[in-house]
Length: 421
Image 1: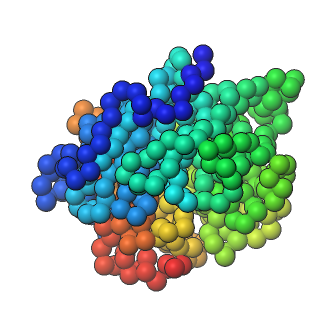
Image 2: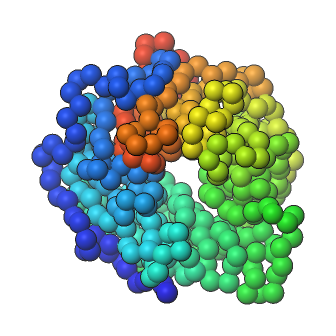
């Protein structure tokens, strides 16, 4: 049953405590949070009040917004990051019953949070909540987008008129690409949608992909009116979204090996996209997922340029839980932005930093591997956000909460040289 909840903050545990230190007292020595590292060190950490299943993370001004994976029952946390070495939990509210709210997007004075059915929960909420950030530390619900079906999975919104989401609306067998009109944030509405032929089961379509494969939208990052959409086992789909009511497919591309394509990051001004293939099972069952660079100078004819270096299948493949790439720092406005230095999360292999000055000869230039949280086989480093000042905010999805990493002088010099603004 679909649960109608616009304001999950009104139910369950709620924290409001700006100026009150709620983080665990780790002291100044944070070495125990690191298993191994090169050119990055931990300078801050927060366990999110004991609800440490952190997922998407985003900093705006002094506020840090964190979505939670779901097993803890927590939904969204807001922290005061004015002192990154002493993060303070300010506000926190649970996810709606039967749902998780693991994604956050912040722009134009608004916070967008997804709501999606979680692990077969009943009842559940399906859509996207809109909050005013008139007070950045006290989000106030003002609107809601009802997706129908099982809800919204991922949101891409950097401000302006439109948000780009993946969702499973009524009548579809998996996630499709949906454009949401945000011009009236109190009443967001669908503007357009695109799906792989065969997904609209209510319309009589049948699968057009191989048995055992999953064709599902994850999220699209844009370069102008071109959207680069990760589509799981289908690889990357390139769409023309100049007509928001009717996105048009330009091309698709996949590559050798296993897929589950997740993030497709266009590098500004280079005609190159960086793609990640997410590992979706513990350990490595079907083969190692990798990160690739793709030439999109002609978006109708993309071609693979290179495969990025692996952290090491032998070292991490059977270490515990997932090993493989997941999220990239997405070069959002107001954050650190580069067309050459790329930051990735790699589950049990932590954070990896790559130099793509030569997109055909990528190099790893830094890394950080988290120590396993107590009671877990390994950390599962999930998402990251690189602030304009170069600090890296990182989440662990099992129990570790959120970490703040600082680059050393060598890495910072390369970041500065490669910065776009």
